[in-house]
Length: 115
Length: 114
Image (cartoon, rainbow over all chains, first blue to last red; front, side, top):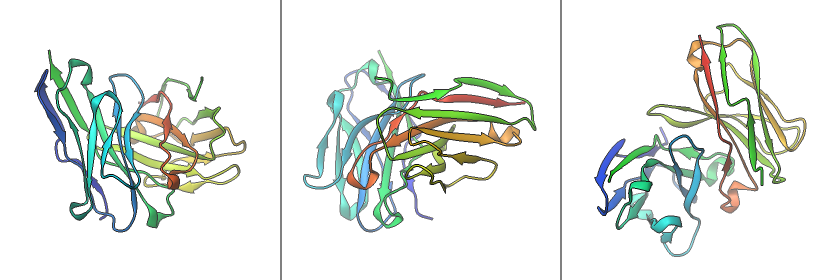
């Protein structure tokens, strides 16, 4: 089945550690890619998005993601995490072959940053 | 800016009861969506709408109905609530997902079915 896979369900890091969250999707053809973040008790907010062009995308709060088409991946990175980055992170894909109406979300990765 | 507003924020129902969740957006977005969020499963699309008067089924539509009589409102109905529908429900809206527009989410409705 076509899907969006986030490899790590829970990640625990100390402050200043580097972060990489994996995301792979199984849709062929053109896709739009997103990372959303959900802070405790809040709604989802956009971190960054990729549509075309430079495969290295920079988002808010020092996050970046790299689109590797050959690997169907869109991994999220941050060089040095802070306690305030504790949240759940969702990778999301809009496959164009569905008409572009549906966003498919991964199951999410819960990040806990120890102060 | 209000953005996407969901009402109510919390609700407890008994099995078999009905209710309607309201989503309102003030951004003139064409597309609106209802998701449910369950632990370990991320967000799953229930129904969506690509414009006033239109609705379509998403990934998990069974047990739910929707209506989009006005562009700014998208209603999610549970005709006969079941414990399996205990979840957090999020509404979202966007201009046009095809053109790389992100979705704007509401604060969610936490629904418990006893």
